[in-house]
Length: 140
Image (cartoon, rainbow, N blue to C red; front, side, top):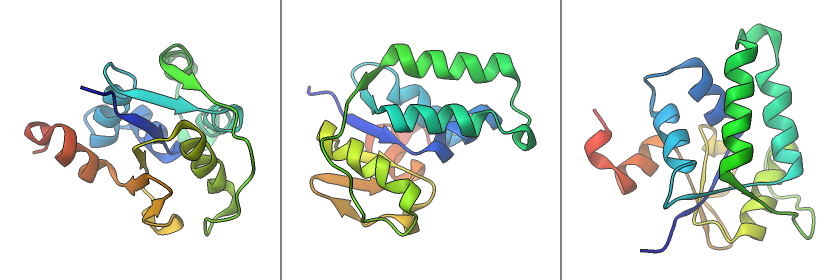
C-alpha cells in the first residue's frame, strides 16, 4: 500500500492541541503515523509555531513544544518551487504550495470555504471526510 501524502492546515493542529478527544486530534495522530506521510514547509512550520503560541488559546508550553516536535520529527519537509495566489485567504496559499510540491493526496482543513475543492491532484477535505475514507470505524 502506498502511503497517503498529507498536508494539514493550522486549524487542525490547534484543534488537536485543544481537544484531546476530537476528530482533528485523531487526524493529526494518523498524519504523523506510518504509512501516512505528513508534508510541511518552512512557512507552515512557522505558522504552526506562531499560532500555537497565541496567549488567547491557552495552550501550555509543554503541549505546544510536544506537538511541534512530533511534527518536526514525523514530517517530510518540502521547499515549494513557486508562490500561488489561489485561496480566498492569502495566508492559506502556503498549504496549496506545499501540497503541490509534495504531490499530496489530501489537504485536511476545517476551513474548506477558503480553498478550492481540488488543487492539481490534491483533494481538499475536512477531518470527518478524511476519517470516513481512512478509518470509518473510528467515527462515532
